[in-house]
Length: 170
Image: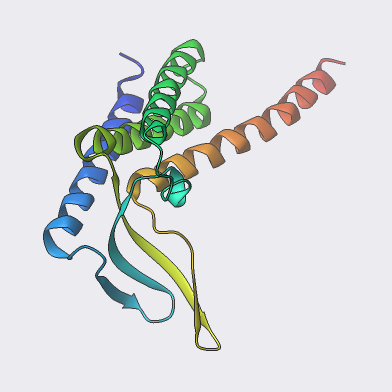
């Protein structure tokens, strides 16, 4: 029961991801762009059949979706096991893990339902008349990236805590 708020975070990510994707699909035509901040940010409607940020999207192998789904399922189980094996009081770690969990589930639902993931957040810059785009992404991708950053921060912080504890013991 102590983990319920972390599980709620993962559920919120899954629901918010599904809601935003539904809004995009229902209001923006495929490959259409809606500029929000000129020369910086727009909403687009794209279908990503590859991994994060479109990696492998153009591969014509039937194995790519199987590998992506298997990888997402593996991440799901690894994160769940690790989340339950670590202390519930380790907040930064738990939040990071559950952000990753919610994001992985959100994208996995799309892959099983549609065989692609809906991406819609498109950041870009216009330099000298040439646009340079970061690959489009979605709420689930954002949650995964933030979760990974929190895990990294947690790993970097723990050696400092161990050093401080060792110094205060001497």
